[in-house]
Length: 360
Ligand SMILES: Cc1cc2nc3c(=O)[nH]c(=O)nc-3n(C[C@H](O)[C@H](O)[C@H](O)COP(=O)(O)O)c2cc1C
View 1 (cartoon, rainbow, N blue to C red):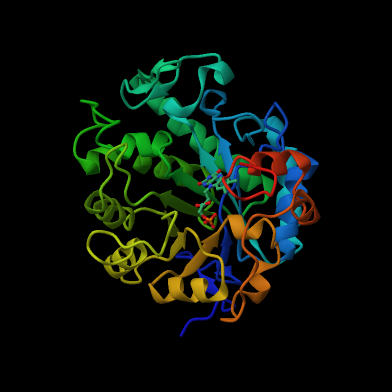
View 2 (cartoon, rainbow, N blue to C red):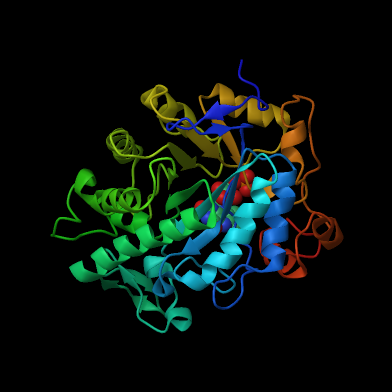
């Protein structure tokens, strides 16, 4: 039986000291120009100190036009490198490996923020106020691929161990993967393998710009009805990703206990299919030591957590114990501030139903 406190390795042999992964969490604490703030750095360092095997930053936009919300971390310019370097240096003082999550919001980048009409794989309805996205020109698609690669290079220069490509949650990469949001007739659209072209080219471009030891993870939503991604599509995507130069997959399940219509969890479906050919991180609604052990037994190599790490930054230390049962939400603002969340981040967490005592 695998235990949370055992090390594991990515496909390139990078040793990860613990099975816990701090999943990417937007925290609104970056400056307006996308540079990291002391608050954001302190928040992440506190969790490295808590023993997470991997620390993933918040989703960070690779182009100004890809920003999804205010206070978002950026990796689109060289002015971000000093802050990134400080963060990577600080994480390295602990055992955790460091990853920046790279993303572009696509049709979910509000025009009020970017000053331009949102772009996507195709023209897609966004909302009554926002209207619809514009289909990206081939030139824009290629520029965006290059922006992902340049952003990854900045992360490597800053000293990070790798990047996670955010292909989940309906953002630009997922918009290309989805049959409903990608109706292109060129090489970037078509069947699921053709809709993967954007992701494949990003991986190739990143790999072409970083050294072979720099790790690339890919995060996916295995099923997303809104944009047209089925589990069958995801298995095809996973099979195809095995031949790419990536080190691991991260599946975002939101609730890892939920059974798919096949009667098995998504983690089990995917891990059985992958059959140890690449490491899998799975994330969604893990809270206790028993939960974490369940997920490892479903076939995940590592357990991603987001919300439980907010009040409990030392979660990894106890997570190997089946008796570990940390308190459930809601938490008082002070409890979260004591765990190195700034008042701004606490305020953001008030929007997550039932999480903060004086929130929604
Ligand atoms: C405050 C907050 C911000 C999040 N931001 C991101 C993000 O930037 N990128 C991402 O891929 N997922 C993001 N997520 C999703 C988490 O990574 C995770 O998949 C989800 O919260 C389920 O895990 P949990 O039940 O352990 O919280 C966010 C979740 C929370 C709670």
